[in-house]
Image (tube, rainbow, N blue to C red):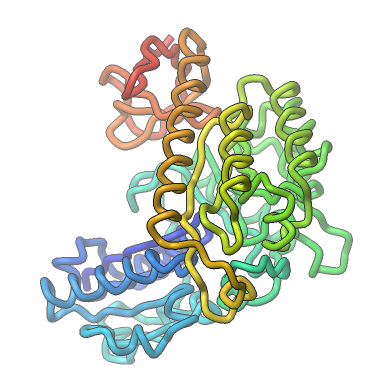
Amino acid sequence: MKYSIVTFGCRVNQADSFQIEEQLIASGGSASSPGEADLVVVNTCSVTGSADQATRQIVRKIARENPAARIIVTGCYATRRPDEVAALSGTVQIVPNDGKETLVEQIEPATAERFGNGDGACGAEIAPGLAGRTAFTLRVQTGCDQACSYCIIPSTRGTGRSRSIDEALSEIDRAARSGYREIAITGVHLGSYGRDLGDGSTLFGLLSAIERRAFGIRFRISSLEPMDCPDAIVDLVAESDCFAPHFHLPLQHASDRVLAAMRRPYTLAYYQRLVERIRRRVPHASIGSDVIAGFPGETGDDHETLATYLEGSPLTHLHVFPYSDRAGTTAAALPEKIHGAIVRERASRLRTIGRQLSERFQRSQAGAARPALTIEDGSRVVTDNYLKVRIPRGHGRNEWVTVEITDAGDPLSGVVV
C-alpha cells in the first residue's frame, strides 16, 4: 500500500504528521506522491481563511488527479469544520485532532488490513532523510489555554497537555539512535509546558534536563510567547552549546491598544526589553516574529507604530498574517473591521519590512563561520542561527560542518572550512 501525507501549518502539525508516518511505515506502507498513493492523509491548518482554502484546493486536486485514492482529512480545519470537509469530493474519513494518535487504527478495516496488522504500532524508526526530513520535530505539548481574541486554535486543539520530562527524554533517545543530529522542540503553547502535569515541571526544567543528558544533538526551541521566555531561558541558550541561537517570539502588534484588544498579556515595552536582551546576550541569534495586519479597529496610526517599530527592531525575519475572521472568536464580533484592500496593503508593507530585516541579518553574517547541518542532497545547510546557505557539492545529508558565509546575496552562499 502506497501512502502520502500532505501537511499544512505549524511545526506541531509537522510533528503529528511524522508520528502518523511512522505508524504507516511500521504497518508496511511505502511513501509515494499524492498522485500515485492509495491512501492520502491531509493534515490541515485553520489559523486563517486562506489556510482553510488551501485544504479545500488540495483535497479537490487529489480527488481529481487520483480518484482511486482514499483521502483522510485530519487537523485543525477538519476539527473546526468537519461538515465543510465532508462535503469535499474524495474525502473518505475525517479524524479530529484528538484522534490523530490513533489515526492508523481508525482506518477502515479493509484499508488497515492492506497496510499490515493495523495496530498503529510505532516500531519503525525513520532515519534522517527517509521521510524527506533532516531534523526531527518533537512535540512535547499540545493545546492552549491562552484564548487570544483572534485565535481559533484553543477550540481545535483543546486545553494544554504536556508529555512528561521522562517521556520527552525517551523520545529524544530514540531519535538520537535513529541518527538525528538536530531536534526542534515544539508545542501549540510551548511556554506553558508542564503546567498541567502538577509535578512542578516547566519548560526551563525540561530544557535543563536535556542539557544535562548531553545527547550530542543540537536542539532548536520552537515558537515561544514573549511572556513565556524568561531570562533563565535566554541565559541557557546563551551559555550552552546544546541549543541553537534561534528564537521565535510572536509580537502580533506594536500598539499597546491593539495588543490589549488581542488579549496579548504584554506591552511593546516588555517585548522590546526581551528582544534587546537576547541581542545583547546572543549577538548572532536569529529572532523571528509573527505579526497581524488589519486587526479590527487598527488605525493608520496603529499600523505606523507597528511598521516603525519593526523597521528599527533587532528582529531577523517575520511571518505576516493578514487578519481574517475566525467564527467563534471574540475578534470576529468586534466592530470597525478593516477593508480587505487596506488589510492586503498593510500586510504587503510589513512583508517588505520583513525582507529588509532578513537581508540586514544576512549581510551582518557575511564572513562569519557558523556550525551547520547539511540538508537535502548536501548542497545546502541550515546554520545554528537559522540561515539556509548553499555550499559546494561533496557532502551528504545530515552532516555537521562549519560554514563560512562568503556571499550574503540571494541565495546565501558559503564554503565549508
